Length: 114
Image (spheres, rainbow, N blue to C red):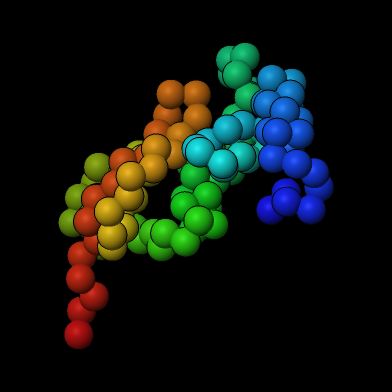
């Protein structure tokens, strides 16, 4: 996304400065998200929370689906509210996506009903 703005090292240096200033969050290798000050605590957070991490996965071409826990909760099979930290994917994901010690976990998506 930044190829036309400058060299690899120069862009990396500016991104690192923005992360240090609290304007951006590094959520994964080559993935950054806009940051806002947290209402509680001192560390910046993304404005949309964990949804930002799912959007980052979509941006790199990994399609995400609701987790089994979320599907069960939405269908009324359980009253336990899912945390949103688990995302279903169809293929293996080797990336670690997260911020401030919060990261996504991945589970195999259920096959589509025919």
